Length: 475
Image (cartoon, rainbow, N blue to C red; front, side):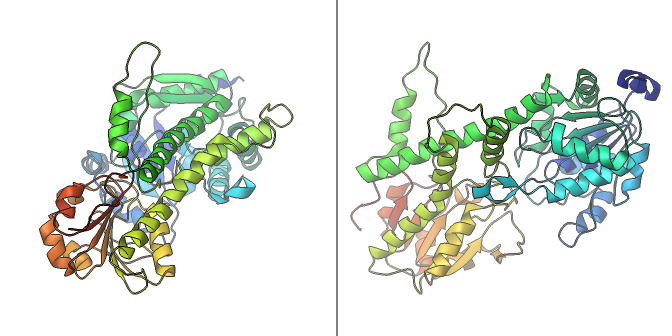
């Protein structure tokens, strides 16, 4: 019996499982459950010490995400009250489902050896493989090294199930393309890349995603092309950020305002001229951009071994871009030290108010936050660091305070790391009063404040890309 015959025998997709209740899995499960085309959705979550609490919350219709996610909380309440969504630890329920998606983190423990840590992904694939049946669709949404779907993932699923992908069950890669703070909107409106291991798998996966799309459309391709597409789009975005970050460092060194330069470049428009000018900043965080370059790099080295034609002994442009972006929180540390020097003080014994622990504005996502690098460097230099974030309520690695006044009080320096709305209207007079110093230092990592307002009140200002202000006279 062919795979298409198995699909006809099973009928349309009605029951769905989503493995991994995180920033990707939760909104995906809620949107599947909200569609009238589907009967029920199970969210699968391990009963772990770090994330097991999500199970009870989700089954009460509560979102475990503390950041601003428009529409998600209401949607969860709705689908739970309708009885269409349940979160469970019982993976045996997969046996009754028509389709299962996996949204599992795929980090690198050691980026230098270019070997990804697929431990969590392998465990999830094993659980799924034990219970899939003839005609089940399995979709890998996790960002993976090119070649993973047809190789690593397929191998585990076939070994655990005793079935053959492309003959007994469908297998596809449909990478997530979401950003914290707009999860529901992104899933509905972004085009969906779908790469099946064969045409039947691609068509079955398209059937799964079409009901949750509004303006987005299906973009079919091979599984490997889908893997490259996802890793490449994040790698190229990281490259764009690195380009403006390097320009910002150059502008600082030459005494120029990078934002003036950026605006000037942007005035040149016309046929054949394309611009993708992003903004410089204190660093790149999150789970995706910080590691997807390495997935693409590994794919090229492994799959392209013996055929990749590249300048000999030259470093990868993409990896160099990663290095530049990883350097930006270190640059913030250097700006802080330079600012303290202007008031004849070193970092040892200084109190630093760190504003922003999440890596992204209006989010509680702290994964790979650049603030962590900055904090570590200052602690090693003997400083006292106090962290504030309006969205992050807790973190296992650092105490995060909710009262910004307490954090700023008696601070020698204030560092702006995250572009939260709460930091956009900081009152320089109030901050100076709270700091209780004649010349407090303020380091702007996101171009959030007007330098002159603070400089005129006696602040020592330092900002990324602000070569025109970083050596200002002290008022």
